[in-house]
Figure 1 (cartoon, rainbow, N blue to C red):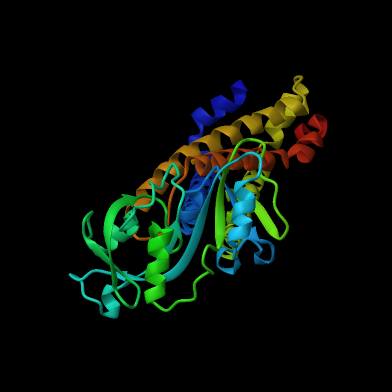
Figure 2: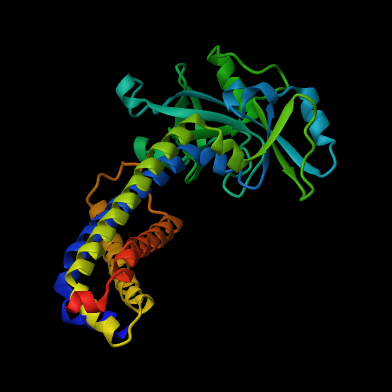
Length: 357
């Protein structure tokens, strides 16, 4: 241990190349992780707004809101189920929104997901009797404020903005109205509506005993619903693959560095073995140095990542989540330690008599 620290202090330049390479890889991992989390969170805000509640879908829908239809009889059955506290409708449609001030030409309109809902959550207030609750992201795009009219759909139906909520985007900003207002607007738009009393899905608030699904209904929690989204699956698999490859590259970089370092130290290791050091002691030296190098790389790399991200356009879907930084830090440390262990066989084979001559 002392030998490892002393060498790091006396010859830091020897470790500078691998530390620099690992630092750049940490920057890459942090930015990639930020894009993965940013894309996923920007696609799932409307779902996460119902965290802690259960979702009821028609069985053939495969947990896809737009494919699902739940009729009034099923809602009544779920409402009467043991353990159920409240049941609310939730339906959505993709349309456009704009303002009179900005005009109604195509350049001034914004794509939105228009939702009708009934249950308040920790994020969403009670559905307004008249008007809409608007995603803060749309406020930034249209420069709107509470009390302004938001024009929904191709018929530009005016609905007063009653509140703003954060982090509820679904790829596009979201607009939330009561089920009655939602159906009224879609009726004017001549859009296909679920039958009277029906909705696409039901949001269920229940006690800890859970909910028993009636025939033809699939019950899922919010994480399961998010996991079933094709967009999230594709983005997650793509970025996770790239992040995995980056960790492999980190492992190779560390392994090659310590393999070369071991070649340079063969005579030194032979002398240490001759005076009583064993392979485990020498390996501890490399592991300690790998841990120190990776720690410096993580700290500097994450700091550089925040500086780099500050210069990126603010509209990019990039979010740095604390748990992602923890994963990167632990992954980098473990990768570095594994890379240093690749020298075990070479160190173990050093014969002091042969090496010293």
